[in-house]
Figure (cartoon, rainbow, N blue to C red):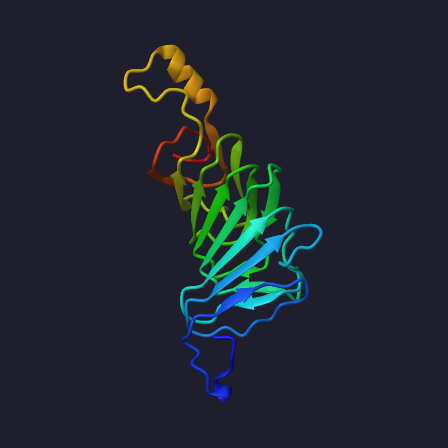
Length: 212
């Protein structure tokens, strides 16, 4: 789908796009396009001036997070890319600011080593999925006014999050206390109705003061 209709190339084909260190403006069509890039302070390929429009189809952007992303400039954006995967294996905590993004339906955050804080979300019509985070806090922040209502809802999926201290079926009180100490804290403010979709073995604590 890296073509225009006038060139006579099928725009329903799948494009495989690797972002560059320059300003990227790929032409994407109606296929299930796949994009990949690096978030980093030096040598990064997701840049504030990039213009990434997924067009039609169900598109996926996969980002290796090795630095903070402060959001897009007035010229840059992500539009109509339905799934974004953020993977952190660096051992350092970073923040991904989602300003300038629209049309994202799911963020998957693989906090393998170090965490990615997702900040300035502008839409509640999105699913968040966390996988393989062993410790720390999974933090979600929203742009001003997004959670101003009194009936906001959000779906968060978790898969193998937290460290279980005991795999035994019958656990002592000491073991249960130890398991809680290995919990990952999910911090989501401003959400009145939180739905958890849980898969695998998880030890999770909730810091969601507005949830009923």
